[in-house]
Each structure stands twice: as C-alpha cells, then as structure tokens.
Length: 106
View 1 (cartoon, rainbow, N blue to C red):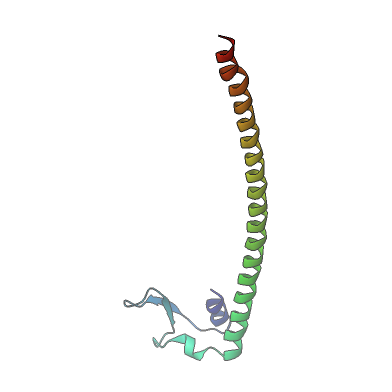
View 2: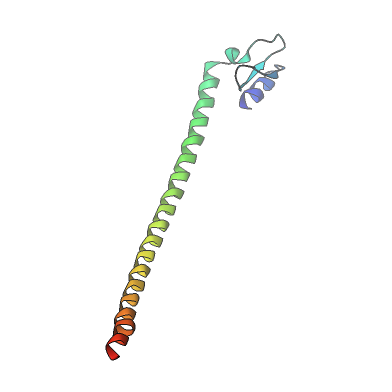
C-alpha cells in the first residue's frame, strides 16, 4: 500500500497482478515492467525501517501482555494449590473424626 501511494504521488499508473507460481502480488506499470526495481533504495529502506518499528512495538506490547497473563496464572495456580491443601486437611480430619471415630465407638 505504501508503495502504491508513493507511485501515485509521482504520477505512475499501476496495476497489481498475481504471479501464478507465488502468492505475492507484483506491481506493474503501463509497460508491464516490475515497478519494485524502479523504486529508490532510500524509499525501500525507509519502508523497511517503519515496518520494523511497528513490528518491534507489537512484539513489546505482546510481551507485556504475556508477562501479565503468566503472573495471573501463577497466582491462580498458587491459590489452587492452597485450596487443595485445605481440602486435603479437611478430608483427613473428617476421616479421622467421623469414619475412624465412628468405628471406635461401636
């Protein structure tokens, strides 16, 4: 899209055709020449730098979200382990008082 806008600003009429052996679209001008070879290197580099900046920003955001999720899951795991311990203690006390205690009274 950036390349399309760049070319339109310079008055180049373009069309997009798909190569049959690849899934990537290629931009062609009126003479059906590949436009990518005509674009200045500085423009290509600037486009790549902007893309990398966006990708790095996305990665950073997703890392932060993943860290928060991991911390939340660790807290939930700790709480679950505490509840399991409480239930096991209650079950042991129940068995000791009711099941074993009931046998002794007979």
